[in-house]
Length: 294
Image (cartoon, rainbow, N blue to C red):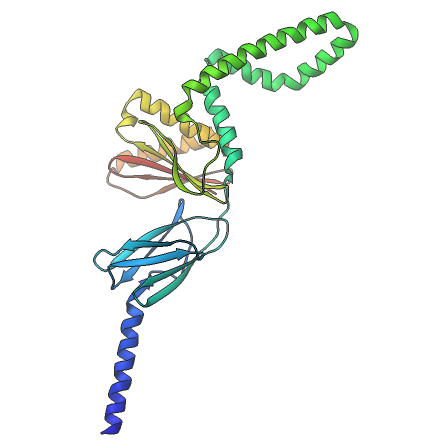
């Protein structure tokens, strides 16, 4: 009788242990971010699941039909995520990825190009030409100053007048571009950096580094000239700032669009690569998504 009782107690202990192990599960023990985040999924027998990333703030997510999921933004270092559901706990890791750039540097370069895109076409060409010949012009002016100081002084005055005029035009362009500019600084996390009627640019910033970008466009806006222009300009400028090859990316993207039109029910993600940058393209019923990562 004693042996039977001990056996029953042992079986009960094993059963309870099994129940405890199944109270909280994850579909993986190690995750690699896709797009801008790693998606942690699993099942739990509680109404909510709590989780902490690298021992930080505790977050909660509700379960739905016994399952749950949440996203962990990508970072340059391995992240440890501790999950808790009642008394059950699990620990998983998220692998590191390479940053696109430091946020401040990227924002400054991107904003400069956005402002320039709002200048008249003639002025844009003049600015591009001036940038190309800046060093040579400076050298010529220095040589002229040795042989003909008056002519050099007159040329310098002309340059100053042209620069002053350009500054005024740039100030006007900056006002026109204000809704399309990135914040010069931003806190860590996932957030919308640009949010207009035509396009949304969402970014993941961690420790001052830009980990990833997503360009989100309503499909209805892609049917308007203004929407097409806003998308094309934003996409090209983001790609250029990332040092990708815009023409190559645009040509490949046009093929992705054609394929998507042929199979409008497909939600598969297509990947375009250029100069170390990945452009993952996806579609929903009402939006186009382009994720940019390394």
